[in-house]
Image (cartoon, rainbow, N blue to C red; front, side):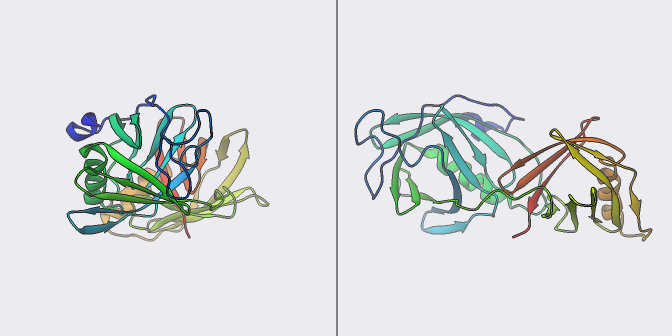
Length: 256
């Protein structure tokens, strides 16, 4: 986790020792070898971080997943991260964490710094009780998480709000009509959108012609690069990533 303290780097997958914990308040590391633990293979939503007695509520996208194959990954709220973890009894120490360094206007960077510092501060005691995971530092600060049982959002029919736009830009894909429609921040847009084999072929956009403040128009120019071409797409639970052949990439979250 020292790397995250010094600088967030642009993406890296890191191998980790599986973090384990037992049910009903038992500590990680107890039980027989080879037994599947409820911490692994679960997407945990971060609820809050409590530091020095002050609780900081997490944004909706903050989460952590620890895979049995030995990899941990998640989101600090806007930026994604991965890490190594060393387990010693009921404690785990995170290290060698890397993360993206995107700036998301509608995601609090202060929370990301608080979460990353707390996870890096010391070895963490792990405890799972009734679908909730608590990570506790040596100083008593805590990260509280809840098992996320919501089903992944479907690509079609979901209103996807594009991050970094203050909620002004959103898109919806229609499977029956093979179209995408929504707002680009200022103007409404519609276009053909055929989904095949992990790609979306998007047609030329048809938009309204309102003039807005410069920042909104700049956002629209960036989003219009996604049209009239082919996009790679990936849905991670309630997060959609769209990437064009020229490297333009946007991230969107499903409206709740």
